[in-house]
Image (cartoon, helix red, strand yellow):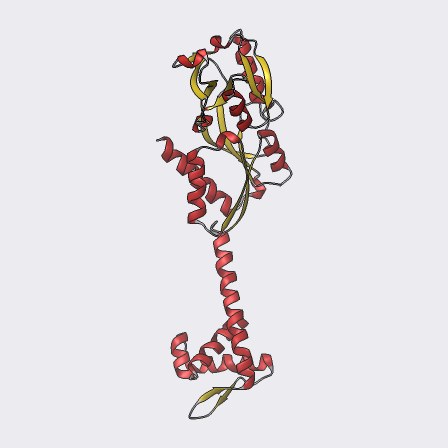
Length: 299
């Protein structure tokens, strides 16, 4: 490779002595001289003036030296980058995640990954399950954290379980049910509900409504909230109550309390989902990191 010839040239140029340059390169002097001669033939230019007393750069050699160093550094950088990408230490990864994933341990795990692999770029975007799966299908993102259950069709994707969350009841702090340590589904009769949009998580919405109906609760839905922040704001304002994932409890805003719910509600299972053909070393390293971190957190 010509990069090797350039490396030999730079070494001789720095030493201005073929013997010392050969020692640095761990080769004998004759092959070194042959490589320099071959480079001169490639360039059709004499690079060194050689006498029995000394070796000096010609004008052509002086012109080549900074360019050769730049090319060698560029080649080294390229090799380092390629190796880092192959090891999953560098590259770009686009990630969609549902709002329920936004826990302190999720954020901490992301931060630790970015700190450890500073050359990796993570593009994170909050999405609903429906939007995330569609984005995956259209190759707009590489990986998604979504709610999954048997009724959600993910046959086009690979998947790995990330975490389980329980349901909680979000209440205004002065609500009568806030006096209880635990609330049963049957306690929710005649209550006004703030619900998430069915279009965002249709399977979860339907299962939640079926669970309420099975407990003889006909929820009076007074508000549909498209984002969780709105749900919490409305509940804290006394507009209604809401069934939320336990990750919501990390938002300890004024006027809002959470209580465990007793009853048969849908399981909240969060999965990592991706296309097999879009797997990269960076994606695999990231998923391994996230699974390791969640395991350490829950143990």
